[in-house]
Length: 179
Image 1 (tube, rainbow, N blue to C red):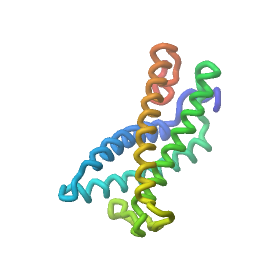
Image 2: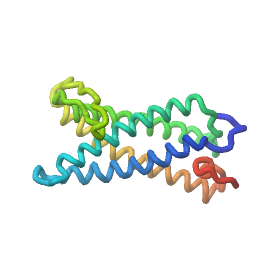
Image 3: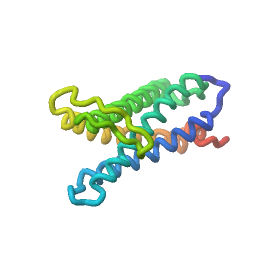
Image 4: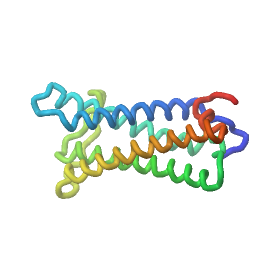
């Protein structure tokens, strides 16, 4: 944290909003895919896109974490408790995202096949590492997705609370607006 930095970098702002849109899109598509029948024309296409976007989001998230480590960020505003809560929430958001990425990978590669990313390249498969891998990883993936959506909504509500009730710069730091 840096008191002289007043906003997140344009790079982090772009990654933040792109990630938010992608997370909500992936969640919606994931729920929709659960109801697809074997005979649906989307039965194979939707999972291909879901996996491809998920892997690109994983790479973007890794880049985001590394970028945050080398780029100064503005200080967190609020009470001591709000600052601790913000740090914990951000940490849990990242952990949960990585749980989603790993569980999705384990679901998709349990049969030993790799994951084609938009037919650009193939991420090699790990194969079956434990019994009932795709079922267990699938359950973890589902619960982690729901937890992520709840966490993101709480994150957004906290930003709106800071903007409208506290009237501080928390939201402005991420949208690049000045006071």
